[in-house]
Amino acid sequence: MEKIEEQFANLHIVKSSSGTKEPTYLLGIDTSKTVQAGAENLAAVLCSNGSIRIYDKERLNVLREFSGYPGLLNGVRFANSCDSVYSACTDGTVKCWDARVAREKPVQLFKGYPSNIFISFDINCNDHIICAGTEKVDDDALLVFWDARMNSQDLSTTRDPLGAYSETHSDDVTQVRFHPSNPNMVVSGSSDGLVNVFDINVDNEEDALVTTCNSISSVSCIGWSGKGYKQIYCMTHDEGFYWWDLNHLDTDEPVTRLNIQDVREAVNMKEDSLDYLIGGLYHEKTDTLHVIGGTNTGRIHLMNCSTSGLTHVTSLQGGHAATVRSFCWNVQDDSLLTGGEDAQLLLWKPGAIEKTFTKKESMKIASSVHQRVRVHSNDSYKRRKKQ
Image (cartoon, rainbow, N blue to C red; front, side, top):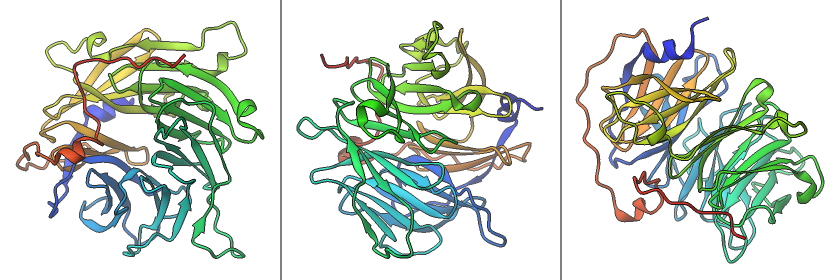
C-alpha cells in the first residue's frame, strides 16, 4: 500500500479556481460525501466575506453562493447522507442550504438562545444532531444542541435547541468535532485552553463529560485519530500541537502522547521554514496521523506524527502565493483541495501533468475581516485556564 507521504509528494496541480468578483481568503473547505450519477461532485468553501461558495469539485467553477448576511458564517460542513451544507452564523443560528439549489434562503434554520453568537459547529456522523459553540457573552460560553432530522410530521423550517452545556468552558468555544463513527461522542475546544470530550447519550452535562485535556492555550483545531478513533489531537493559535490517547483514561498509561508548545521551533525543516499549522490528517488504512503546515509564501508541508515528535516529510510548492488557510483530502482518489489568502482554490492530484499558471499575489483585505480571520503571529501568547 502506498503511504500517504508518497501520495502527497506525487501531487500536482490540475486545476485552479477561476477568479470571482470579490476576492476573499478561503478559510474552510468540505466536499460532498454523496455521489450521484450524472451530477457534479461538490465542494463548499467558507470565505472571509462571511459567505459560502459551492464549487464543481473537478472544474472549480463557482456554481452558487450562500450568505449569512447580516451575520458572518463560521465553519462549513456537508451532511453525511445528502447534499445539505451547514454553517454556523454570528446571528445566533446554524443555517442549512441545499447545495444543489440556487436558493438564497436556508432550507432549515436552527435557532439558538438569545445573545448566542455561534463561531464553531459540527453535525454528527448519522446527521441526527448538530452542536454549535458560542462566543463568551457575559459569563456564558455554550455548546448548543439541535435535532437535525427532517420530520414529515413537522414541516417547520425553524428548529429550537434541544438543550445546551454551559459549565465546562469559560471562554469562546472555538472548535466542535463529532466522532467519525460514534454519533454520541463529541469533542470541543476553547480559548480557555480546554479540550473536552463528551458522551451526549448521558443525560446531564456533568456526567456526559468523559475527560478534559488542557492545551494551556487557545484551541484552533481539533480532530480524532487512531484505531477506532480513540485518540484526539489539538492545535493552538500559537502553533502548539497536542495529542492524547483516550484508551489510557482508565489505565496507568499516560494519556498524553505528544506535547509541543511551539511546532515552529521543534520541527527540523532543514533549509526550509514552518510559519504555521493548518490542520491534521489521519489516514485510516495506514493508521498514521499527519500534520499539515505551511509558509507565508504558500508552501505546504506534510509532517509525520509519532510519540517522539513531528518529522517533516515532504512539501508542495508552486501553487499558492500566500498563507494557506484550508485543505480537504479525498481518500477515494487521493486528491487534495487547498485554499489560501491569495483567494485561490487549487485541486491537486497524484501523478497528474502539472498545469502552469500565474501566481496571484497576496491580497490586501479590509481591517474588519482581519478581526475574524486567524492571524499567525510569531509572538506567542499563553491563555491559561481561569482559576
